[in-house]
Amino acid sequence: QNIGCDDYLGSDKVIDKCGICGGDNTACKVVSGVFKHTLTNLGYHKIVEIPEGATKINITEMSKSNNYLALRSRSGRSIINGNWAIDRPGRYEGGGTMFTYKRPNEISSTAGESFLADGPTNEVLDVYMIHQQPNPGIHYEYIIPGDNVISPQLLAHRRPGEPLNGQLGMPESTDQEDEDLHRETDTLTGQSAGTFPVIQPGRFPSHQPENQVPAVQPSRQNREHNWKQTGKTECTTTCGKGSQYPVFQCVNRITHEEVSESYCDSSTKPIPEEEACNLFPCPAFWDIGEWSECSKTCGLGMQHRQILCRQMYANRTLTVQQYRCHHLEKPETTSTCQLKICSEWQIRTEWTSCSVPCGVGQRTRDVKCVSNLGDIVDDEECNMKLRPNDIENCDMGPCAKSWFLTEWSDRCSAECGDGVRTRSVVCMTNHVSSLPLEGCGNNRPSETTPCNNGPCAGKVEWFAGGWTQCSTECGSGTQQREVICVRKTEGNFDVLNPYECSYLEKPPGQQSCYLKPCGSKWFHTEWSTCSKSCEGGFRVREVRCLSDDMTASTQCDPQLKPEEKEPCNTQDCVPEIDENCKDKYYNCNVVVQARLCVYTYYKTACCASCTRVANRQSGFLGRR
Image 1 (tube, rainbow, N blue to C red):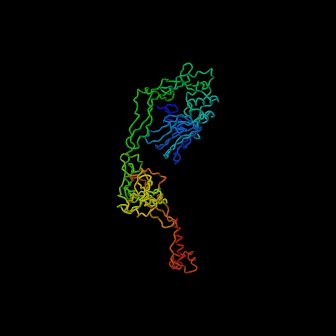
Image 2 (tube, rainbow, N blue to C red):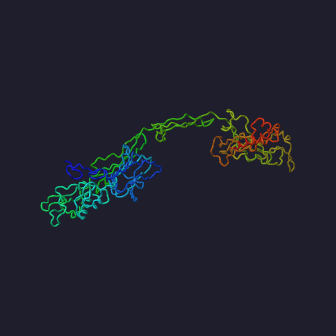
Image 3 (cartoon, one colour):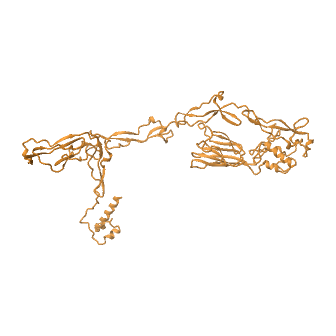
């Protein structure tokens, strides 16, 4: 036959969810719910409060996420995952009970984290969620004592013979015996006062067994029974230092036969003291950590996990040297993984038009990395080596050409008299104007302009003066000299008309010169036509930096770069005056105020007034 939870042979009593032997589940209350609030801020968010005395605690995340559960006592002590530090799964003591923290495998499991504890708790505990992504829902459940809970305090203050949870107590006894009974109950149930114990009604039967001793016991000196140690409890661990307690039974003083405990004085029963047992260390074992995230979000990647050699001793797990685990095969620390198939490149648009109307430019197209579900993802999820080009050069043919000019030289070719100043002129491609493609044409701008530094002294015959300085400080220029027809007199020279020396070969008055390479210089085109004829427009020209061989350069001084855009025609616009446009009536101002100028009759009868209003409105809109 079976033995029930009340230790009676043939009894069918079992412990209910409230921990009461033979109970009907009404002595406690189940508290459960789901925390589904939408959270916005990252960090710790309180989920639920676990009250003092709670048992059968279960806090479970409804599905896997990147969030973490955390547990803290009301006094502020962190129990699990506190201070932004994530603990490993395992057993953690807190609130007077032991919590089991589980975090399923990140790769193979879809289950979420959980806290489990049998209880009861001896203080209020707060459960938090470390929020990092949308909340999948947190299920919580625990049991708390109901209004009709039987606790050791009630047993101690119960009147003799008073019903206990529907059962009768033991026969009347003295107050001292009640206290002994209270102490015995605490010892048997393993609970301390004030907690939620496992009540065993079978120890307080409603009927009196046949071998029940009388209510009035004999004095101690006449008693025939006493307490005797008959053994020890089973060691709490098989290795690594556990604990056990001596077991005391009531026996006959003469025959040493075990009898009911009611024959002995409960106040004289020895208090069992804890004894160490199984002190030899437990075998070492491999403590296997959880797999890390896959090194790649798609395709074949790698994942790692930590493997430690650990050993249990005195309810503590210690990390030891790995040679102690050599008797066991070491698990793999790395493994291949593949979360999903990699994404692929897709060309979403055709090539755009070329970036320039002529010459060499660029064109683009839209290239995206698309997942196997059709969503656009980051480029890093696709193979960058296979990415199609999204930009390329395009040739739109030769461009129009324009004359590019430097500024006039600052130095005149002649120190006195007439001379020239020079500038450089070159025909190059122009992206601003729209001249014909065949070239700049024959209208080449002049490279010289007259200059005069004052009169010079007279000379004899054809008199050639000294060459002037080169018209340019660098590059190709010209030099000038004075050649005049003079007549030499005593101590003087008389200047004659040039025809007087025409029979003589006239020396050249100009020659080319080259001092040194110029390096890079700024060239610019002529100004374009003004964009507006009045009220302020602008005109543009193209400016380029060219080297001595007329190729593009970057060596010009940016401070000396000529302006590429300037305002022009800033004068106000003056409407043309029509002599035939006059007001035919004296009260045309009333027509304007009434806004009748939109009608042909009034526009003709009050032509001048209506025209002035129209000009003011068009000017206002133009300024906007």
